Image 1 (cartoon, rainbow, N blue to C red):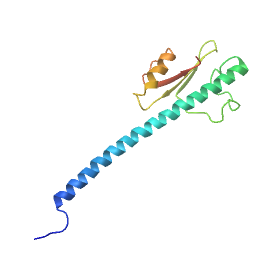
Image 2: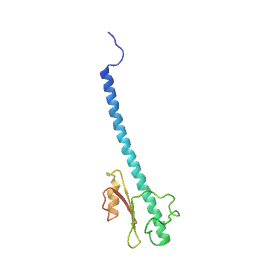
Image 3: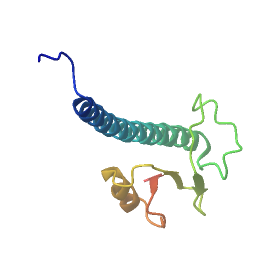
Image 4: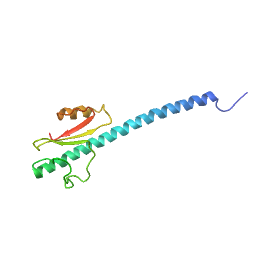
Length: 127
């Protein structure tokens, strides 16, 4: 007897394999998206740091808060979690929370900017 086609067991095995592969791909895709969002956050803070330095060059102090008009220095305000000016007005700290806690830039940014207490914060300071 020659039967053409697949048995039910063969179809179930193929469906299980496809489901497993799909799960792995979706998980890796979500990780890649999180890393991309983190890269954008870090890039935005770098641009924001440049804008704050330009503001400092014009005013000899960093803004006490970000309610001042910075449109001459940066076109679009990036998302950030915290902005802090130091007491003398000669420094600042910007913080943003990253999704990828194993990002190698995370610890390096915290080491460059003292006084940071959150392990998930990427920190940019006036240097």
